[in-house]
Image (cartoon, rainbow, N blue to C red; front, side):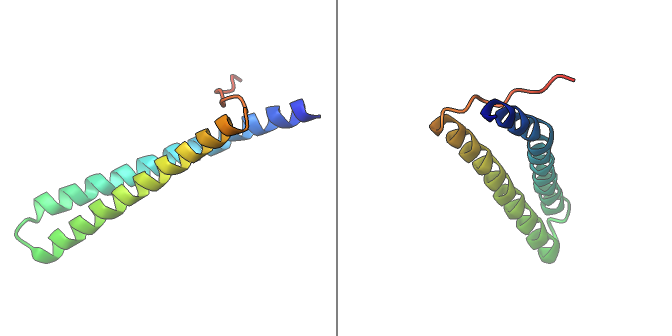
Length: 90
């Protein structure tokens, strides 16, 4: 019974959670890059520069949260002696 549950959870993490984390990380990185672009492209406009700074800040906050969550998941897996999640082959 426990083996079946571990296999199921492994598939859920590998096929659902990991792609969601990757998508969120990519989105946060795009927000960060957009902020850098806004900051540089509109260097003369104080309002646009502030928008760029805000986007940079929130992009970095998003990346820290996402990678922090990933680290916590790996820490929990190591603490409870669960095997690391491997990519499931079709």
